[in-house]
Image (cartoon, rainbow, N blue to C red; front, side):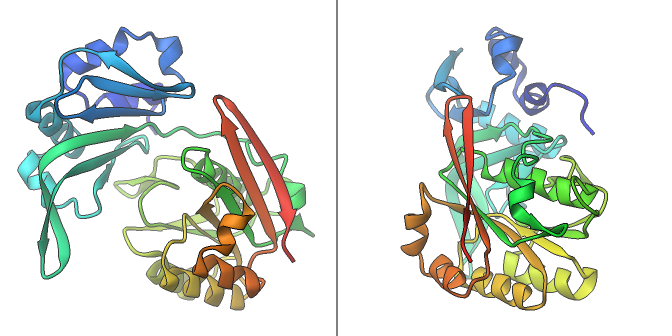
Length: 300
């Protein structure tokens, strides 16, 4: 595991000058850093709980964006971009580098990016114990009731999901459970060379680099989980796989974008899952600055 402060691990991919500019902000403030944004032609910005601020320094150019990619992948930018079809790279420590630029397609599939226009460096940090107050409302006789976590972007859905996975796997408040996570975008456990960079428990199996539909099928057949966890169901085939897993007796943990329960009714995939009674509990997250509120609703 990376023993540096979370922001230091994420900022390690910056070119030296930008690291120096960032350091001038002050370690105390940077302990709350959520993202760094490098947009071509503008100075670097930092996303903090109170909002996005301009850090200063010279405008970001092609060279700085290229260096970030090279540092993140430990290879040339040209070689690295040929491998980045999902638009992001996972770093040691679980941090993620998101990339924007000109998409190059072959046979209808994205195969690379060129002419980078911006980079987002998202700081990963654990929040062990975050889920503890919720566990009594989400479990029955020591077993998880299938739960959907709902929140707008940036409110901490994945952070809460990760801590629920850890808590169930380690047996917080009950017997340990076998948990299998489909980490399609590397945000839950953030595997780096096969090792989770974010702690997800002693009884957790992680599959990344594949779709939720494919991953759930593999895990249900091969790992016999008591709980299956996925982040942000977006496609109909993912929703079908979640429903199928529930039909096999596996409890589900999932997240969804939305400001409130009414948003779920507007989206066919979630509307069908709720109508089928797949989820028994709904956790609604809200965040204002550094303050996060969580409430649980009974669905069925």
